Each structure stands twice: as C-alpha cells, then as structure tokens.
Image (cartoon, rainbow over all chains, first blue to last red; front, side, top):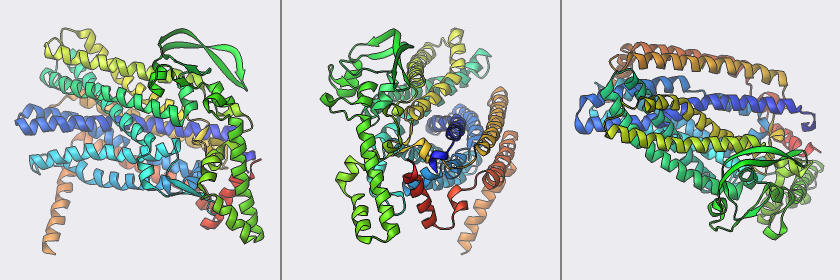
Length: 518
Length: 75
C-alpha cells in the first residue's frame, strides 16, 4: 500500500530520474543545434562550391558524430525507469505517453540508420544535393524527434485530450489534436529546440575562439564564428520570445510554479518583474514551508503584470492566494480542491465496490460519471489533491526555482551579447585583437550547458509535488520496490554516465586538437 | 526481383565500405556504442530494470486492479 512507501524511496527514485535526465540532456541540445549549423554550412558549400566550407562542415560534423554516438540510447534508460520505478504512473498515463514515445522511437531509428549514415559515409558516394538533403533531414528529424518527447512531457504539465477509464485505471486519449496542440507543448517545443540552437552556436563560437587563441585554422574559425554568431543571435531572440510565451502559459496552467519562479508570496496588482534578488527567511510560514523575503531587489515595475495579464495593473496571484484562495479574484483554495479530489476518489472507490459486489446498476451509473463533463471539470481534474494532508504541500522549493530561473534568463541575455560581439568583431576583422573576448567565448561553452540544464530544473522542480499536474503527485506514482535497489542503480548510472561523458570529452578534445586536417 | 537484389547489394556495400574506411574516432565511438548498448540492454534491462507490473502480474486485469487499489487505498 502507498502509505507504507518510504519517502526516501520517492526521493531516491526522483534523484535517479534527475541524474539520468541531466546526463541525457548533456548530449541532446548539441545534437539539435549543431545539426542545423552543419546544414547551413553544407548549404553554403553546395551553393558556392567553395571547398573551405566542405572542410569546415566535415570538421564540425566529426564533433557532431562523437556527441551523437555517445549520447544515443541514453534516453532509453528513462523509459526503463518509468516501468520499474514509476509503474503506477506508467499505467495511469496509458497510451497518452506511450504513443508519442513510440513515434519518437521509430523516427529516431529510421533517422539514425539512414540519413546519419549518408551524412558520414556518403561524402564521395552520393551526389552533393542528396548529401545536403540528408544533412537537412538529420537536422529536421532530430527536432521532430524532440517534439514527441516534449509532447509527452508537456502532457504531464497540462493533461489534456484524455478521458479516465475507471475499469482499467488508465487515461485514454480521446483527442490527439488536443495532446499535440497542447499550449504547453507548443511553447516547450519551440523554447527547448531554440535553446538547443543557442547551445550549438555557443559551442561553435567557443571552440572556434580556441583556434584563434592558438593561431590555428584561422579562416575556418572566423567563418564558423560568423555563421554560428548569426544563427545563435537569431535563435537567442527566439528563445527570449518563446520563453515569454512559455511563462504566460505557465502562469495560466501552473500558477503555483509561476509564483514560485518569482518568489511571489503576496498577490499584487501592477506586479514588477524581479531581475535580481536575494531570498531571505521572512520568519513566517505557510504550513511547514518557509516564506521568503527579497533583499537587494532589482525589478522592472509592472512588467510581471503586463507579461501575464496584458495589463499594467493586472493582478498576479501569489502563493498565499493560491494556497489559501482568494474569492475576490476567483481563486479556489487548495483545501477546496482537496475536497473535490477526495469526492472524485470516493466515486472511484464506490465504483470499484459496486463492481466487486456485482451491483451492476450502481457500477454503470458511477462509471458514467467519469465521462460527464461537469464531473471531469469540477471534480476529476482535482483528483491528485485528494492525496494531500495539508494545502501547503502543493508548494515546491521556491529558492531552487527562483535562482535557477534567474541564472538561466541571465545567461540567455549574456549569450545575446556574446553573439552580437562575435558578429561585430568578425565583421571588423578584430577578433584576434580582442583576446579577452575569445577567452570569454571559450568559457561560455559550459555556461550554455548550465543554462540548458537549469531550464529543465525550473520546469521539473517547479512542477513538484506533481508528476501529472493536479492528477497524480510523485509519491502516488512510485513503485513499491526497495530503496536499496534504486540506490544501487543510481550508483551504476552515475558511473556509466560519467564514463560516457569522460569518453566524449576526451575524444572530442583530441579531435579538436587534431583540427580539420585529420 | 533482380533490381531489388541489386539495390540491397548497393545499400550493403554502402554501409560496408563506410564502416571499413572509418577514421580512428569512428571506430572508437562504435566500440563505445556497442559496450554501452550491452550494458543498457543486457545488464541494466535484464537484471536491474524489470517492468514492475509485468513481472508481478500475469494479466492487464490484475495490473488494473493493483493500480486502482494503489490509487484508492491510500487514506
């Protein structure tokens, strides 16, 4: 039974999933970004016939290949974890999660076995245009592959397009359109993929800067910096735009996460957007959760209200509103949601009992309730709240989300500046003279990874305590297995992934040092 | 039939030649891929990551009943 599940099992299972996802995400964004940069480089080569661009493309393709090969299949482990550690969740989500992942698997297989092979083996065996088409297909295919994963992930943030079947305890998809056009999925896909483009661009600018610092392959480095700088700048602006759209969607569908991102405890009209702030303990509590005060706050007045409501004096609810309710603003208290969730769960219990004792009439009537729109909108949508003892349990870790979000956004703006400077210095032919910039560009490579990982930390930590927003908290989703087994596999993964990372970095560093001639 | 066999032969030769003329880093990453896949599928999947519901229960009915019990039994 769930009440017997040790909390450390939940935490270790979460830690294991986080470890796997974080390592997996070290490989993915470079594939997403570098694949498009390669496609642009090769397009220039095919259009101009300039052999330098062929050499440049082949050099970056080598680094792409190393990253792609080491990263391939690391995501499969996440699927293993669903079946072993998160079995209640896996069963409950049914085909909604399975269908997009299956499409992704098939797409990835065909992509990897055909077009990637043409990219690497086909230089002198297929025509220039066919080779170029393969490179573009790899780039587009990698992003499409990410689309299905992100659609599945977004459903967890905003479950739509399904109906719960009380017979099977599974959610069944009743609208593929709603699942794929989920507003969270659209925002997440555009934001995530463009952030991968930024990471790929920072990588190319950073490594090219290293060549310039060493006075090697200068022509290649300068051309690469210009192309990646332009691509990175456009992508960075798209990241900012999609991030803004994403934040507005979060404010609507996950208001607790949004308030936590801003460390907004008191709801406000004309709320300002905090740019920099240091959180301190206010000496106040919401249940067992610490209320934070803001020190050294730098904010844009009214911007948060404008961003979320479109009005400068629009009301942005704080965590206290969201937990305790605010009837004046139409905000339902969590205690009310808990009652509605408990009612929905009671209907499921009664349905199960009616089936067990053979009371068909009651079973039919109770089962039908799960298809009634009124019951779905007013009761079943709060199903997961029935597992809480206290309303404050819906609040995630505010400091982690607040700081992660600010560092991510700060780095995003830093990359815009980096790309502007890269393009500007390259156009003026002054890159080599500004060695400080080259060093900054080189050390920006790990910062791009940091920003990318922090984005996921905001998303996933901000969603806590939910595994499926409003429907299933993490402690209900976990399998009743031994904590020791999870700890063992956690250590195995830590060793395996660290070894893969060391292998990738060492092979890549050696190949970079060899340069494009080898 | 002959045309299909010829196409298959071309595809085979394409991959064969590609693997044969692979650079040092290509050979190295393929070795890593093979070791990694063996660890993932032969070690982790078989010994550490059995599907919890599939190994504990024989039918979907039993799995459904178990999950419903998990969902409704708490508190």
